Image (cartoon, helix red, strand yellow):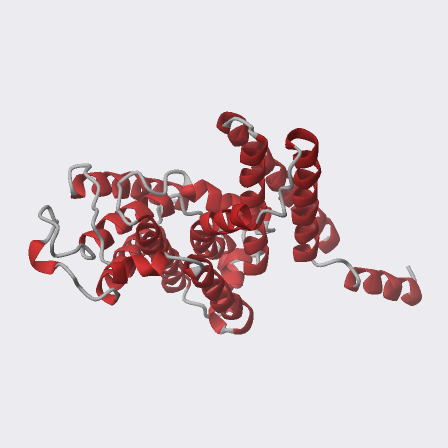
Length: 339
């Protein structure tokens, strides 16, 4: 290949459509498909119902908050299966510090009517602590991320149930439930997304995160404290799961041990659908946000069409597998291009 041909190849690569744009086009295509099916099957519009779209976005905002943390973990080459259970534990603890004083069955009668910021901080602390334990087990005990976070998933769910012997925590203050009211969950989700988009793209934290995912040994040789950074990434993922627990309990007005069930898989699905590679080193927050929206549109669309929940899970699983297959194909192409 001469110089001219080489330059043409380089130009074509530069003109390649960004992954996020391709994923966004998929989102638009799915939404249009449900709109067409809506008129055919139900004689009604899917997209022209603001209430349905608002409920969909509110539901996915909580999973989206978790997915932002999970995305960073996957970029390092790890995985986090504990986020849904951490959400449940956080929701229980947070709600117990946000109860009204006139509730006779308060978990802590002497700690009622607290300012909303104290339950929020308690939730963030519980989530961060769970993430720190995950990170320490992975970085120092050298336990594979799958096993470490699987153990936390089971333990945190058990602690959530044991916290009040399986009883829900109710009668929360208006100050606290305001966090989950209206469009606040969406605002929190977008704020978190913007914050970590900037952190991954423009800071040393992001540079180290991608470097560890691409090649941990090379990152270590270049002077990056890999263990410390992994603990930080998992702590952030735990903190965001804790934040999701706060928002979930505030939105529902209660804390329940069954909250967040299977949310960790939805968060991983959102990240993978959004272009984050399970091999590590590749992924963007913008893609994860779009991936979460794709999941939300699909679930809302299936519900709108009256598709049984069991079939929805089957389709969701198929989409996750398809996203992984696409990711593996991309990885093979990169390896061939590098060779």
